[in-house]
Image 1 (tube, rainbow over the protein chains, first blue to last red):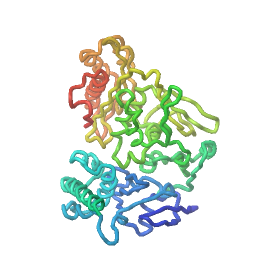
Image 2 (image 1 turned 45 degrees about the vertical axis):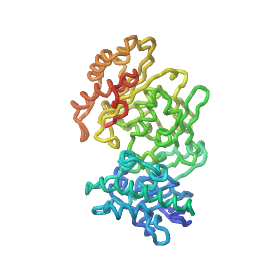
Image 3 (image 1 turned 180 degrees about the vertical axis):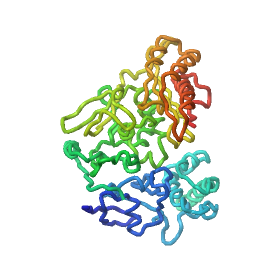
Image 4 (image 1 turned 30 degrees about the vertical axis):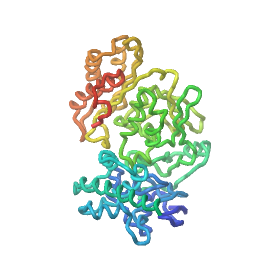
Length: 164
Length: 291
């Protein structure tokens, strides 16, 4: 099978990957040791493989790696800065918003895309934003609380920056 | 890993049409149906990506609203002109198609190309009298969406690309619309959905289109119901009478989402609610509920 070379930016770093035509973006991530993005349903129904492509949250299981050529990808591994957790990650930990934790990266990446556009969301907006993310441990109350808390933490961060 | 032997990413429509002329090749855009539903990969060895053809436009031009094949569900749902057309039924149907992540990937044209009877946007597009522009090696052809669908996952599209969907704006002037989806949640595939457009003059219905989804092998225009609406007062009584016709005309199946009997019963409800919205009679709270 002929392989293709793609060039993209992953978590801020320019990379060149050799992929197969039938390889999904999720499979390519796993092959390159980025395994925080999870394979759960594999059919685009659960958003467990959520990542950010050119600023939009997407499911990495239902697009080809080849389609990511020339684009910019952010995965759960790229959220920490200098070893410091992103406020959304911190809020999920503080709220205990994970049971088995397998769906958590997908929730966090979806929340990341959502909060960039809605810095002051209502609870109803958060619920609508997370409606596609499925947790089979059935814990939705705490993820919603975590996203609301993260929104507040990020607002405080921004205000501190603007006062400096 | 999918069994795909080659990935093509042409930059011109002519190149894409030439590539597609060969057997065993299919179009990929968002990929959210193609890559996860094995029925679309039968006999497919190579894919032709149309994302580099610069088809992600939504423009108003010479009396048409043109929506390019690259426009995602989210772009359509958030576009001001689409939101303003017949009470925004197309924007609203795009906004309840799949999850937020899927709406960032899936395209409106892809929803039409997949040709599933349960799809959310075809009823709204049919109610808006949309047309499809297909491009193949033989050139381009314009097909009314009315004659596009043939059966589940089957359409008149041969080895062709949907370049764009077009909605006539002149006849959409003063057009009022309604859309209602019945699903377990808004993210789920519809059990039944309905889209309606009406033109009302002095309280009477002068033009009507009523389309039901997930109740027949194709998105179903209920022509008998449309005829029964013509010239009638735009009232609850009219809509109740028409909903009886809808219940008689639908041809639903039973599957894991709903029984045929439930779908038949709900088809009348969905039709009534879509018509009420179009007539401005929807009770408070009913307009936007989609579950």
